[in-house]
Length: 111
Image (cartoon, rainbow, N blue to C red):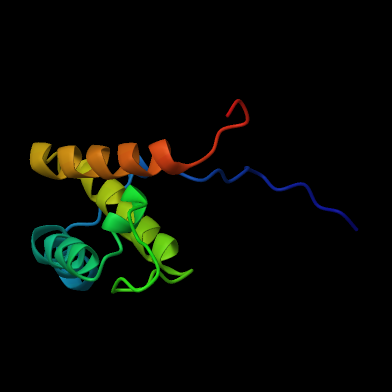
C-alpha cells in the first residue's frame, strides 16, 4: 500500500544552515581560521596551484599528477563553503584568482 507523506521534505539552502559551537562548530572554525590557509600554502608549495599556468616541461620538478586538479578543487569547495557565512575579502580574492587561472586553461567548445 502506498502512503502519501503528510509533508514533503526539501533540502535546506546552505546559506540558511548554521553550525555554531560544539564539536562541529569548533572544527569548522579551525578549518576557516587555520586549515584553509595552510592547505593553500601546501598546494602552492607542491606545484598544484602553478599547474594551471601550464609551464611544466619534461624534466622539471615536481611532475604534475592526475589527482592535482581534484585536490585543488577540494580546496576551492572548502573555501567557498567558508565564505557563505564568513565573508573574507582576502580569501575571496585568492579564490577568484585561482578559479580565473583554471578557467583560462580549460578548453571551451568555441576554442
